[in-house]
Image 1 (cartoon, rainbow, N blue to C red):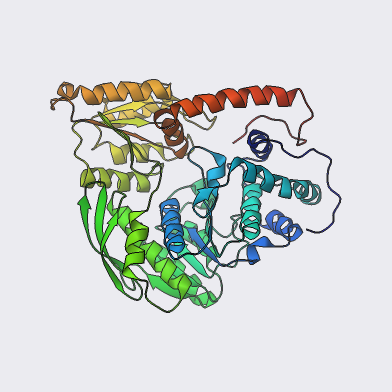
Image 2 (image 1 turned 60 degrees about the vertical axis):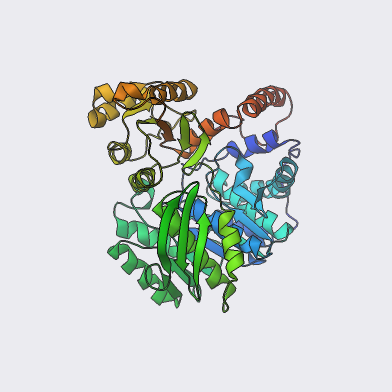
Length: 485
């Protein structure tokens, strides 16, 4: 690192201290579209992002699942990997993974302390302070360089051109399906959004394109031609040959860029995950260059695939499924997967959404599939209140098919009761299921309740005690300790 004067402040001692210091910065929902701050910051750090090759992913839905599959494929090939994804499901450290595992609390604190002094330098020299997301990106790039990794798999936070991750010169760019989302930030049309996402395609790179709307494809192909990027398109150079739903997932045949791979088991549900798998395979083939991947390597990697909170079964009797769909495109894909892979009668929805989303579009996508909807909310200030969601839902489902339950735990209990009492909907008792959806945050909080309930209670108690202690001592950062995200 370069020698610069830094602000006073003691290093973080614990994960919670580092987390609170990061959350005291501009939240992910407050944007100032510029790469100036992250460029200045990474210059101070010695441009760690230049020390390893990168696969960079954008798109509206499917980025995290595809990133995880790419990561698993690379690790099965004995490469050491770094993976940056967002948002996290349960814990902030999930965003930065080395060799498929989130940073330990100790590693997270050490990485924060490595970069924290330089946050103040950039704050003092730029028009706006470093944001939470920019800080996390810098931490990831520094952690990957320190590891060191053989390859980094990096998911954009939002968009592409102005996303803080876009200070990398990725040799492979991946564009998952582009649909309407974050219109207030990225543009009011698919073409506008596609232009923003096309910004990750760099000169001389290979761009792997998932199947796209025709207008979106035109924008992406024009960008590729402009910068001299090689193009690989789903449905032309690669794609899913066949898929058959199976217990615990699906069986696939995939045509890659250089070979066909048959008899692959993917323990994820839905046609959209099969397409994500094809994109992941093509991205790894493009990254490695010439040569065919061994069948057993591909088969092993896909069999190990996981994507928490994406049509994830977390409980039985009744079956409870978590899915982070938060826009109409994602909700439609999840709804199709429910029909494809499950046979719930009845299916009860539990939904908590962010108020800045296309809530009515999400409701409309799920309406034909839910026998009843329990409206709830998550813990963030951005969450739409359960009462407001209930009013919107009543207009889509009808009042008799909607229940309002603000507490998430109570909402899940209410939905489970309705699913078990299937006869109330004219179906056999015990054949029902519950889908918790609407937001990554809602799904993360539900996962903590259903999968890690005791751990979550212990962490919450420890966090409360530690925050009280921190407020009575000297703070790490100059900002206050209130969560803004």
